[in-house]
Length: 399
Image 1 (cartoon, rainbow, N blue to C red):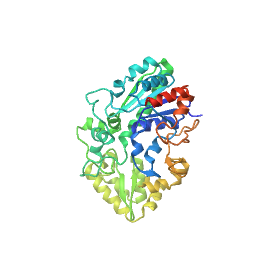
Image 2 (spheres, rainbow, N blue to C red):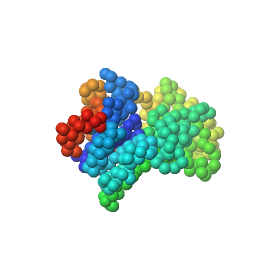
Image 3 (tube, helix red, strand yellow):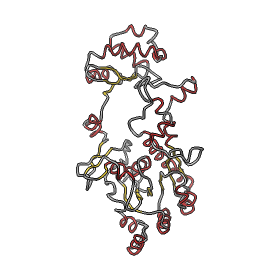
Image 4 (cartoon, helix red, strand yellow):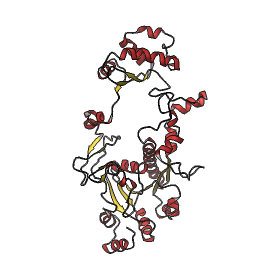
């Protein structure tokens, strides 16, 4: 039994931030009913990569969900949706703010139908504030949220992070908010609206960066792989490739110095303390010293040697490294085998990072093959419609 196996979610989301959230809920056992436009469906059905003509993008973030079709512009479809809300715990959407209100299906309407409903929405800038009408995408969130300004090589141009971190952070934050609202409902007996902004999510991710700016009133520079709070915490050059050393405190630096057999570094005022080492001049000087030591070894050898000394170190993995590492694939189940009727029996999907030890997450149902593939199962089995009602809705273009 999943941790959320008593929860029913009506999922109106598409593309990434919203589907990522509902994927998390579904992996934790919630009954997630993905509602798509008849004949069209989620935009990502047309996003690559494809295998056997089917989108692996869509299949990955929509696993564990049941799929129905519903055209919200048809009056009969709106009426059906309101009936569905009566038997649901959550409604999740990621339209531009105001779209659901224009359809006559906004939170103020839904809470009258079901006061216990929890309504979650993720958008570029949230449902209020001076920017709320602006469209939002991951790259917009990374840009306006300040992440691009601190990402990239020293002296280089602003860079978007390689993964869609704005979308993923927004999806995770919406998941957290929905679960908090679920607990609040157990206290108050009432649902509520949960509003998450992609840009807010990126701004919140700056952790100490914002505090450093507020304290020093100095814009941070792009630093490549370095970290403003400590050094050496960076990539370094081995004989064959780069790798990472992460000295997060003074004790770890002292262990590294002992391994390098360079006790004189601790007597040098440029390197003796953590505060001294983070100046620009000290970083350059110490980086050269460490690189002169590391260039004599292969990276894998160095990682083992440094880890053996009790200092954090790591290879810089590419996706091949990750997908072939049993520590991630087998031990942590960060790639999960999920047979798909079109893509194939060998399909793998991303694992869930949340490990609930008592009620483990499960990834066991492939994404809906087509919009509305589960119409009969859901509309008849869950919401009690008859064959005649289904036929009438289909004739009117509602499903």
